[in-house]
Length: 349
Picture 1 (cartoon, rainbow, N blue to C red):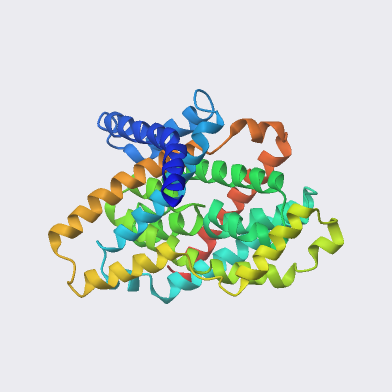
Picture 2: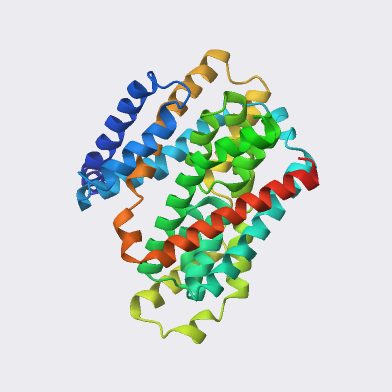
């Protein structure tokens, strides 16, 4: 019985995964002709085109989700086997304080802008967690806490992912203008603003390997704080349903399921895996050749994941919501940039 389920899951994942794989290979090929851009942003761009034109059917959904989520998680774990703990210490106290203040500021600004644009409380909270922490993953972790509906969850994921994709390109000239691609400041800008790990990796790869690695570390530290954000939301908005909606059966079941998981809420497994491999590499328990293999495999998983991220940004869903939803994402993105520039200067990150 279990074997049949596994086979079925593989069959469900395969179509979308193969599309993401082909797009990643195509991105590698095209990237050879535009080395300054690199394969990573091209993979997202190709995924964006494919997911909104030729591959819109539900058959590709599970495979693109697997590529975006699972493969990227494996990639992050393997990346830990290529970095020393000493690299993490380079973030410094100012780097950690920057991350915390940037997250708090993003949450406050996002909720404020959403209030002015008259969006629902649930939608504002999902947008706040998604932009402040780690995009789709944060929205997925927050939605059962406030019993958000599928439409609110889907729209927030679309806006956050699209905003992050735009910022991924926009932040590069900003980093060059303000910081001349200085590793620490540029990494703080990318890792402190961009919504998903994939976007951070793609943006970092457009600068250099040092920025890619450090920007990823900034981002991973942000993700560690996800547990605190979700806990805060659960306490502050615990009575949200009684004020806004009457629960239906599905919402009630989601709420009960969350209650059972509440005590188990913890740091995502891939963050733990990343730091375990990072420690093993620091202690020289991972041979050099194996570390190189980790880096190679991690890089290829990243590209497939980035194609998946692009495929899951649905432009049609965003257009159907009218210009107000797009304006929301735009204003939040601009606010994040201004806040980050100010904090990096004040804290001397």
